[in-house]
Length: 310
Ligand SMILES: NC(=O)C1=CN([C@@H]2O[C@H](COP(=O)(O)OP(=O)(O)OC[C@H]3O[C@@H](n4cnc5c(N)ncnc54)[C@H](OP(=O)(O)O)[C@@H]3O)[C@@H](O)[C@H]2O)C=CC1
Ligand SMILES: O=C[C@H](O)[C@@H](O)[C@@H](O)[C@H](O)C(=O)O
Image (cartoon, rainbow, N blue to C red; front, side, top):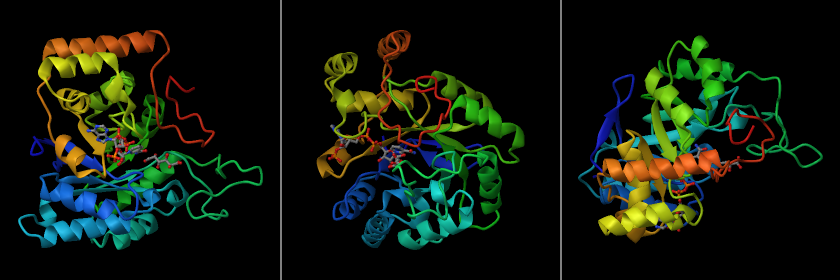
């Protein structure tokens, strides 16, 4: 099922499934990326912040060298890190250099805030009290205006955002000349984020779902309603969690450095209306009880406008 694609609002085609590379350790990520591409994945999701784009690039080159796949068959994603949000093209150039590529298919604003570009660390500058060094009077719309300029450089095929809540999108869209092609957000039956998904659908912004398995260790594979549906179809719980996004019309990113899991995660099944009803009821119950599970919320100390965190 790795050949399913969607069309973005600028006509560019995006695969339904991608390999994630956050926390994919050096020494492991090259072979994970190479294995994934050789076994049929076409989308690789990376970021400057992950500190492994050089190895991701090596994995891509290894797979291309093995034949059968060309660069234009791939969909490579990178993201500008928050210390570069006033220096977007410089941030992109760093990623391209590490990846060994002359363009990425999609470039995203990783988080809508600015960390001090002149602070005490390239990626994670801190204040004397140890907290993140954030420039608090910066407007994220200015970052988007720089992103828009990239489209004329030939270094990106599409631009988008990540970690944008409904509130932040509503601040951005009135000023956007180019509507973001994508909003990459944490998404799962345990964190449905329906208000963002609905707004993005209305505005033609494609959702890329991250942490579909619950991030590190894949804890959502233990969730009872998910396990039940998996048993019914004689598939793994991970298959149900990944298939949920394709049923919602989203792209889903699954991270693994384990060959067997990379292969297993290619399996996407068509969930029935009844299955989706059960998963939606699970989401609604967690929402009503204030028990939605957000696994990724870095300690920026900024209110991003997500209802479960503000
Ligand atoms: N824009 C953003 O801010 C963010 C983007 N992302 C992107 O989304 C990707 C996916 O999200 P991520 O947070 O990594 O988490 P995932 O939900 O993809 O879970 C990854 C974890 O699940 C394990 N795993 C993988 N496959 C299976 C399986 N079939 N059964 C059981 N366990 C499994 C992995 O282990 P192992 O590797 O050891 O096999 C790893 O520990 C990221 O890698 C990144 O590319 C993620 C977070 C934030
Ligand atoms: O993409 C994955 C996540 O957003 C990750 O980039 C952040 O959580 C980062 O490690 C941080 O600590 O701010």
